[in-house]
Image 1 (cartoon, rainbow, N blue to C red):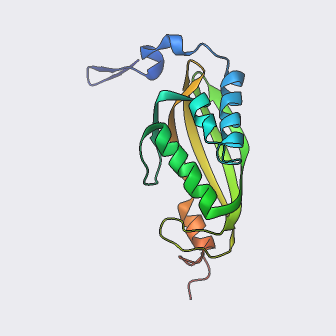
Image 2: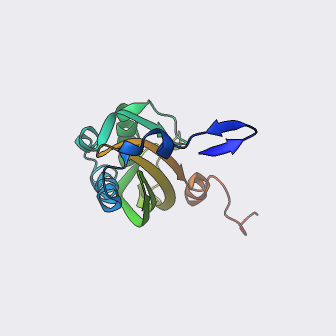
Length: 163
């Protein structure tokens, strides 16, 4: 618990100590399986298996909420990037949270965020933080290198190539 200007701010850990019912390795296995089955293979049923019905997603892409939203993201990305494969590069787990640094690779073969297919290969990095409760992913915060992606697709000049 943190005290700021005579106010108490409780952390998630303070509010729900019972959520730490799985080991960090079990939580990491859930997240790794999500990446392998969802984005990399396009298995949308994995969302029903690994995500809580109360799943909330915080990402910089326009999408619906909940499980429907994550399935939209997976479907859109797989339709936009042929041979999409997501590799988990690093994972850090503490308590109920798992942070994953990943690299997505594919070929831009479909419309993505209004940009028609370019046929160019892409490599995009990102970091996502997952909160696990009762063996299910209940919350996800994600950031991806969209500027780097847009540079690869020719929308913005890369540093050093301004002219």
